[in-house]
Length: 510
Image (tube, rainbow, N blue to C red; front, side):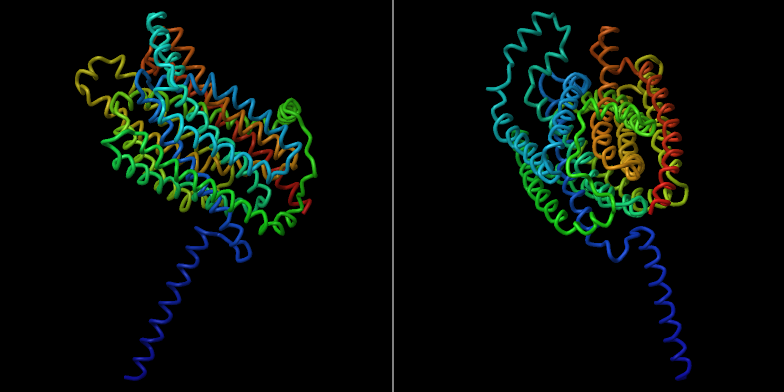
């Protein structure tokens, strides 16, 4: 009896150790972090979460306040992205290049975050509450009458200039604070070996931010649903302000703690990097490798936004009120965060380690191209197949909104989990000059050029075909989407070949 009891205890203990061993192995696959780098990863995760949290709130608000405003529509978005944000992006690159030559990276980071915070607070607590006093409604009405309603969307941009300002700030936050400042810092404290293990985890921090902001925005939207929407905006901007202060503190802490890591990378930057914008562009143009990365970034921005513009026009049609529109977007963001987090933790890193950079990078153009093409076919059928429209009726708009929402979730999840990670990894083996200035040029101008390119295409087609609805352009936009994703797919192969050679050179050098 005693022997059987000991045998039972032994079997139970062994089973416990087997389960614990399996759990540790499984945890190591999802979180492949070494003992000596836990502090570094924690700080980078926290910084990524805070910056992404701000971006998620700004993104959730910027479309709602603009698209649902009186005398406005989704068609104003291409005008803003193509005619306003792109020129501003060029100015931002000029300014960033100039400041980078005369300021420390830390000073540039602090001043940029504070500048964005000032503009956001100005909009939320000064401009928006006094919109009737600072917006040229009377002049816009006169222009509508004078032009006979021919330039409704251009006049809407003029009419709602305060919302346009907020839209621009929100867009640039994603480009400057997230893609440029944050990833430049990460790329300087991580090697290629670290990136393959940890970048999926860092990107997952942004997914967690998306999961949290969805219910948060929805809660405040419902709380103030019977009042002025400005109350919702101000409550959420208060969260943005607190997060910006936390970003500054976390960055300061990371710089002080990660100094040894920066020195150990053996990739110290020169004291001053002097390269003008024209020099940066020539630097990018002279490098076939950087040119192909730029093609990927431009194609990604173009293919996503060319579908999103049409989908938002259906979204405005289904949810014309700001509260309903914001509620739908908030729920969509929540599910985007959930799915993106699952992909980042359980699939992204494993696929990269098992199948390599090229296969991982090609997932985005393949899925975005296929799903976008199906959405445009649905939209084209609505406007050009009367039998289908009569059979389904008004529900077709709802189906388009739902599938467009599914497309939006899939596209953002794939972009966060695969595209962002592989693109940022491609910069790691480069010299410090190319990494800072080339990255700034590609990430800022390249990404904005993609979004502006889709906007220019839509604006040109609206003017040429003399229509105020972007929905009628679905057939032509489908052709542009397919061409863009094919070019994107081929560019990933070119980058992969040169990345492999650069990795070999870095391995030999170390």
